[in-house]
Amino acid sequence: MTLVGKKFPNITVNAMNEMGDTFKLNVLEEAQQNNKKVLLFWYPKDFTYVCPTELHAFQEALKDFEARNTMIIGASCDTPEVHFAWLNTPKDHGGIEGVTYPILADSNRNLSSRLGILDIVEEHYDQESDHLLIEGENVTYRATYLIDETGKVFHEGINDMPLGRNVKEFLRMIDAYAHVQKHGEVCPANWEEGKQAMAANTQGVASYLSAN
Image (tube, rainbow, N blue to C red; front, top):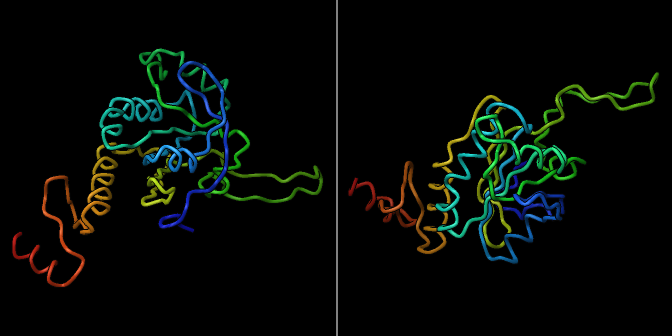
């Protein structure tokens, strides 16, 4: 079920920063206590191929997000130790050295399970081994959540693992939401900062259509 329009789950997760420190991080509390928007993006695994391109792309746009009062948080099911090793691996060797935003280490999968973003094809109980067996990678898809200053989710999206994200689209979405927050207008298809929006009524729609 979608989280759009609802509060993000109040779950605390281990995280790693660029200094190699492990700490507890609660995404909902980060948004509410800091009065900031949050972009939380999940990727399948450290030390893979598409994933570092995304982490570096978000790092390159970090100042653009910060200018929009938005925090970036990465996340996977890897452990803090694996994150630390990846953070200390140079970019030209497939690492993410230079990434400065925090990365969740949801190794117990408490949050990703709650979000329903794990690649689990099937679960079944094996009587012989007396264990629950899982078919699938049991790692996350490329899920993205945009969360406002109250902790409410205003955008979510999930990509299959081979499909990298477009960072600029999230900047556009944040601009559109901020416009709605400030002006109470709605943003039409392909809206960008500086373009005309429309009032949320028939007269406003007609005015927009006549101007375009």
